[in-house]
Image 1 (cartoon, rainbow, N blue to C red):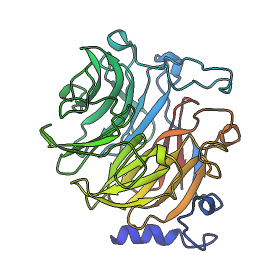
Image 2: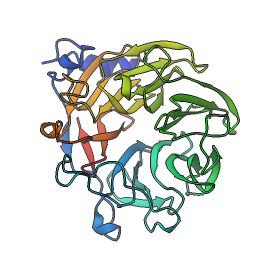
Image 3: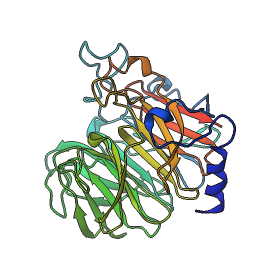
Length: 357
């Protein structure tokens, strides 16, 4: 473990935190050292400064904050969905006729810098910002032979410079996805995609140039099997972490897809993020309730990517509505480089949250 990671983890054992527990039940009772502060919002000219459904948030190499959302189209759900919450199924970016960007970039202080990606996505889902400032976004829509079922790489100025998959065509071969749910880029440029919003339930690995290398996984609950692999992250050792949401666990693999471990102490993962400088692991659970993963609370779990120990838990602001809403709270999560700031991207409440320690 790096000295910086050791210092951060030692903080978790001071004061009221006597034990860092892998049990999510214990994690929910631990001290939360983070307090909510004002988060960035869209400029007033974009839908009156209101977000659409947020799906992911990332912090770039220069500390800027990138937010992926669904372009302000929000469709209210059935009577079982709490008032003011989307059903999480129908929001999209309007395809070619979109008028607002799905990716918004903010300075660390919160000022809006730029928007990217107008008209190139049907329904954005997964998102990453690599070490060079390139933006990677997955599209789970399907406009036949035109858009969706693909992963796009955008340059730091927003130009599409690479496409993985065949837009508008689904499949499970080396050149097709079904509904790619997440994307992560290793320091050497290799690309890993979770093809997990449809039936494929697999991870696909590409070279930095976009050449297919390998794929692994299938539907199931055993080691190396998946049930909606929803997000993906890579730690400082190059290990691949998968938020296996339908199986309520984080699975860990080497780059070749060899199963290494699984951790069940981080709830039912919707979003996953690792600070590679400190190997702090952030996992957000936005779907657990009394019937779906009973006994586990929705919120953000913070712990060690090296040991799997949970240090902190930030409860979902809509925790009291967990049994009334299909999904609430954060689908995406990230931290700044010092682990002193956490961002949460809320799908149904349509808000970006920011916490400071």
